[in-house]
Length: 493
Image 1 (tube, rainbow, N blue to C red):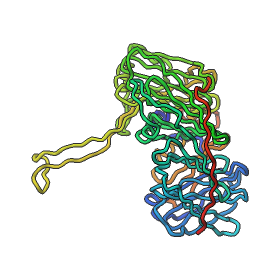
Image 2: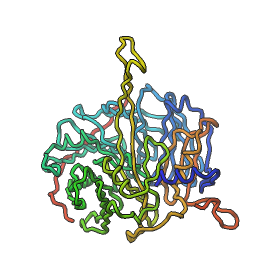
Image 3: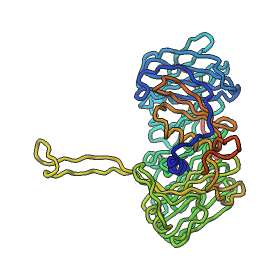
Image 4: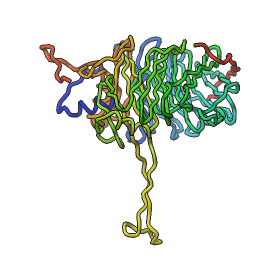
């Protein structure tokens, strides 16, 4: 969806999108393109908006009320600056924000609590257990910061919950579960997620195919983590982790049955439904299943000789992020798709589901130069290595009844408008997207004007005075397993 809208809108010389500047603030960041970081958040209790903009020397904190008026500002020096990425935030019960800076080797976190009224801060440290191998992902829920981690050689995952100067560590045990390919090859839980890293799927934004084509994915719900594993082309193996009860439940969703073996299949979870895709050079299969019951809600099968009538875009082939090329037939599309890792991405807006079907692959190319081209000092030639990628895709739309909708002439969504705005404004850096109740805000640093800017984006185009648009356009198969909770306090510097 995003790529298609960009491709179509860029053809227009002038398009005004449904966006409004809400606020701007003078800010001079040191080397923002190399060292800058930005985080835009909402306090879910008060609906205040915080902006954290940092370079190697300072962190600038801007606090806005729910009407996006600036109410407080604090610039704090970064003590003992290190090359640490900004991982996330939490809001304490006293209403003060905390930032979490991760050390690159995942050994510890530097945590800074900011007191905006007194213009002071306090730095804390948290050391991960020595056996921590790597961090799978981080996220925020209800003003609490979470880290999902993996201990070395252990058949469990650990969830670190940071709140009010304490950290609870919750364990999810996977030792009772089996992992086996469609050919009967068995492997361990450790091997699965080490060789195929879990991709965290972001809510409220479009997730591109380079991410959703990964076979292991993580979705964060209100008090659950959903893990989907698509290493077996005959099934999707799903785990539901309840971080309140520490239950781990397994569920198996059978993939559509293809006439010819497929190299890959995949899935995407969205709003209580599992969307599954499977393809080879002969056919394209697509199922939607109810996540609780496993019931098939919709099933689609398309052969290479058919026309895909539910598509709302051409069939596109894109190489190395270049301009997409249109594929004229389903057969050509499936031929390219059969060599890729298939994927599906679902973006829900209001009553519709906007879906991108396709596949993606990234590979390394090594080019060797003979003596006739270039020689090194030993006279033996030379070589260069670079990364290539390839993607095929098309877009479709489902309404609330899971019926396909023809929306080729529909106005763009707010999220599309944001991506288009970013594509045509080269002075935008350190951008951050935040979804609010019925609109989005884009926060970014304008490195030309030396300002931090917040823009509001809504669906559709801006219209003229006459109303015309400016541009046309089941049941779980395994019993629950439980873990233990450990509580730790931070160490103050």
